[in-house]
Image (tube, rainbow, N blue to C red; front, side, top):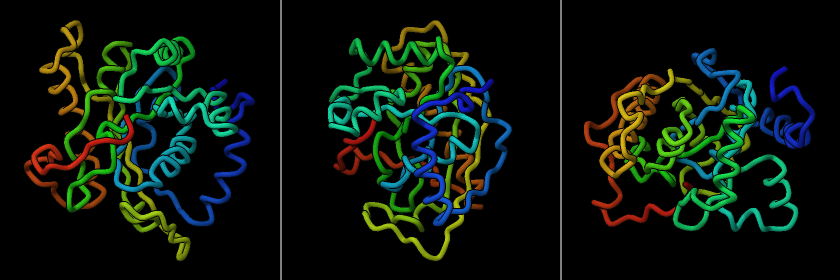
Length: 243
């Protein structure tokens, strides 16, 4: 029996989110069979709208997995919301993006023992690329995958910007929007297994993941991404945001 079929708080969240999202969005999935239905996995989507977590959370449900995210530890202390996040197995991340707190490590290890999926935005925040292509990634996703020995599955989505534009807080409810979601093959990180997780290793592994996400997005958009990936540090832009 799949995790999604077992009674959980996700049933309550789904009863609220799925009908509402269905009124606004039609999902069009590509290569959905590539999403592993069992076993621990790190799912890495592109990120360009504030409503991405809702969109990707619902899409992940439709793809057969329960959506769990890296969540700022402070959010888990908020009344009601924090309780929901804790009960649904979200992984707390301390300020600065560390996953080395005892709570985070315990939650991360549960990914393996309970064969769960976790969604990590490797860009860390909304992309700053002017044309909404994926920007330079952070190492959190690959560090988690390499430390725990679990696969990274890249995912790209396109069309979410019509539902909520980048940096906007306004939802464009009508007309109903089509969002394409494409799942990729697990990223081959075997060359990094057993190596010290230093900056060189993590940067190279993260680049492979970002290349995979970008290739999926190129397929959805029908165009090529820029040869050089946008680097916020070179444009004096903040990279603060999600893990």
